[in-house]
Length: 70
Image (cartoon, rainbow, N blue to C red; front, side):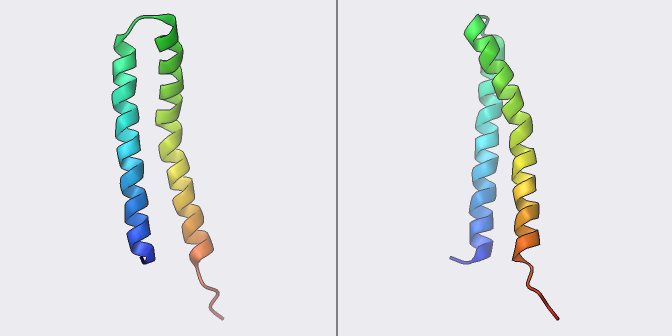
């Protein structure tokens, strides 16, 4: 497979994972007990960090995949 296919597969996986995290966050927000409260806090953190990390990985990929042209 070429690079473009890998990028598409990775992007699709991140979008699906983020969607599942958002749905899980919504469900745990509606449940009222101590465990779900702690789980909700962790899921909110993951909902914020996952897009940031995936964007950072994309920037690193662009930086390291450039060829040195002289």
